[in-house]
Amino acid sequence: MNDVISTIFNINTLAAAIRMATPIALAAMGGAFSERSGIINIGLEGMILIGAFAGVLGSFYTGSPWFGVFLAMVAGGLLGAIFALFTIKFKADHVVAGVGLNILTLGFTTWLMQILWGSRGTSPNVNGLKEISIPVLKDIPVIGKLLGTQSPLVYLMFILVFSGWVLLFKTPLGLRIRITGEHPEAADTLGINIKGIQYFSVILSGILSGLGGVYLSLGHLNWFSMNMSAGRGYMALAANIFGQWNPLGGLAASFLFSFTDAIQMRLQSLNIGIASELIQMLPYLLTIVVLAGAVVRSRPPEALGKHYETGK
Image (cartoon, rainbow, N blue to C red; front, side, top):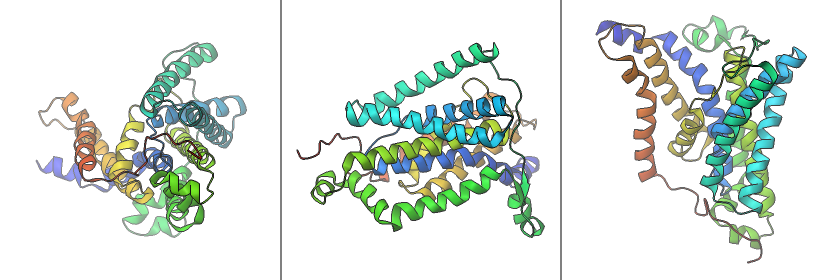
């Protein structure tokens, strides 16, 4: 029992949780922007996956991991634009379109991997992002071990989440996004470009999710593997709801999920007499429990999932 407690309340477990929260928190913020504008974004899973793939593709052909990061953001944005086209212009059901996008992305990346690298499992190794150390911060006890040396995308995630919160709740653009998701009729009356706001929000959602995906392939590992997102998009969706469609709330929920994930990984190395399959289920069980509780208490944007035609 002491081994289990010391494994759970361990600074290395917390450091791992911070690293593992990065893709979930970025995608959760993307989900917050999309859903605050009224578009349910089930497609976060596919956007993470295409970002992870595009990042490796960019690094493979140029040798530059930062070009891979750029390509991942572009790919995520393009997928977001496709999703927006179907949900906004063609008025497809948001959930059905999102699920279809996830399935399409899984098949597309697997097919491309076979075409480009002759493998359905993993890509070749590529140049990944190197960890960086922050002077002074790395020398602070405890905090230095948690945040002193991390992937640059971890630091970028903290900056973007705070910036996203400012954009959403402290700027006129954020107000337009929120009123579009709450009362599109009122926004229309005020002359706000409803579709323009929704396209911007969904594409931004794709860019942020793509950035989360490239953390998996270039910030954490140096390759891409089939279905690399492994349900993180759905965790991001749950984190977004649990965080009340707020980037900071989504970040906190992402830490909760990733902390559980870090615990299950470390518990598997201990002989505690529980089947590893049951331990691996911990983060997903927590996601279901949290989501079930959060859905009961949360109040989503009023017009979430509803189609609106300007002027009608």
